[in-house]
Length: 72
Image (tube, rainbow, N blue to C red):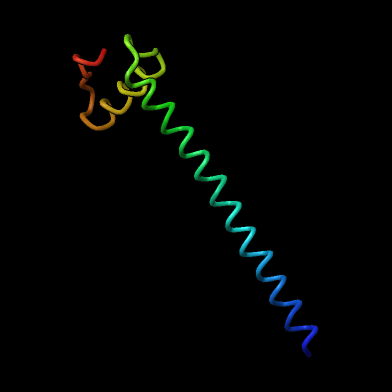
């Protein structure tokens, strides 16, 4: 019985501990990379075409059909 309980403990630790921990580390890395790129693009002069299109798309979905005149 001791062998089974230690195997279960090791399996749960490896499966959930490393599995969830690695998944969280990957998601954190993706989030950080995307966040940094978005901030960098938002501060560029002039803003990249992709950024301007995204701002326009968000403005249209929020306001109906208006365009943000000050950002484009």
